[in-house]
Image (cartoon, rainbow, N blue to C red; front, side, top):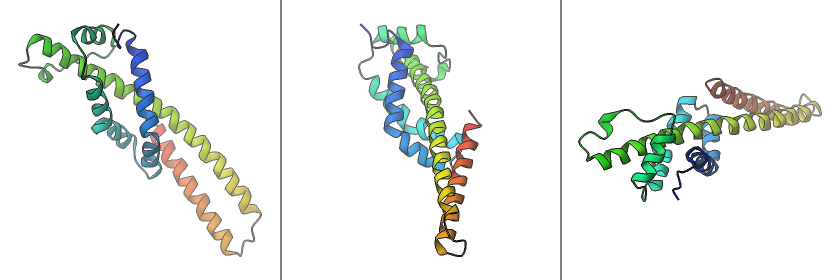
Length: 166
């Protein structure tokens, strides 16, 4: 039985693993002002490619055919496999198809994680605003609390900017 028999189920499981592994780094990238494109690049540059590459070590022609048969986004850039023997060309086409499907699914799952992060930040903002109400406006603590609130508001804005591009 091929690992790709239930192709999108498998892609989803692998995407869950990637997001779990890199979620915190990706969220920090966004909270530091990274854009949607930065987030996509974060996953595309090496993380998803490397994951797909490691996953493809033992992929055979049957696995490749299952990927190509089930994917809604079959790679069509023949330059990627130009000059290869037919069997290798099919494997190459399947690899790039799988990688793209994996990238798309990872980004979709990160949208959900960023929405969760936004909710967490909203709760934290409310707590910090509540704490501010109990401080003397003339104290140094009041000013520090205002800075914390401003930082959280900025992070929410960064998350909103990225979410608006999904």
